[in-house]
Length: 456
Image 1: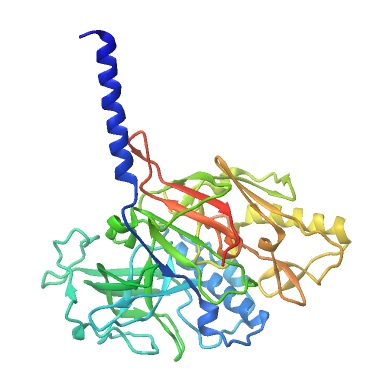
Image 2: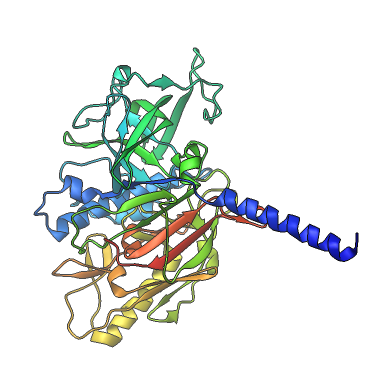
């Protein structure tokens, strides 16, 4: 056999292997669930922009200590600076489980218990409050009556999903999660059916391991609370993404409409083959950090109205030895958070830009400190996040929030020991696609892709 023939055989084998690997990464099924803005659930239909702002500010307020609970080895709480800045006048009607801006609804068990669950990409665990709890928050519609579900099972300690291996004397798996600000949830890891409508409105059902909570402390919820637990989409063994890997293929997407977009339906959180993106797509790597369930990306810098700011990129890096630092993508947080060192330079540039445009200094409104009365014939600045290999360009409507009587830069500071995060407000009218199982030369290379889109 000649050398040429050998080379042809070798290249045929390599091509066959590459085609085989490609088929492994193609999603074989998919599904979608609704992403419901929490303000549409708990605020009255005739609510004012100020009421909505107060709600979103309170969720942002809760997000900071929740994220910092992922950290270890800190003597001081980096959330304190932001928490202390918030005015005491913020009061939310019928205070809810304000851990996320978006909620969803999924039927659990044979009796199809259908609560609202807070959707979060910051935590991997899913749990729901169960009947018989010793420390409970009120839930309209009641807790999950697991004893009435014929499909309910406790998770055994030997089960691979019992991570970390926390067990009771009877060999049953337990969980214990701290969320910051004294919030915690404890219970049994269990297994039951989750049922959701697919995109063609037929019911689809899976068995999912989740927490059956019997001890929920310091949630301080009102009597009209509708949310019964957490739907975890973070990176971790217990994440819905990994449990349903055949359906999700470790990929999900969403497109968040702005609050001013008229719509009779809610946006969808799509998985597997339903998770698609098109148009002017840009892609950057996702940095999965050990012991962190959140999705970090490599942010190199920020521009305002095309001017690159002199921000030290180290402010956006993950801090070694802790889970602080980094820049994460988080739909659960309404407003973007930047560490103080980056926020100060951003604020200075925006203030100077507005001085050149209209000659006015900013005022404060609630948690925001760059606000102006409605301005005529003034072009508000755009903003660009420069990621490694990709640029997220935002028009002024994704930088400033309009409260009718005032417009404010919708970005908040945290201390330099905190975590930077791109909030939901600045993700509007873009499609985001997370691909956690993406391969590059046989190696796992998770990516985040995004493209502008008019979201409905």
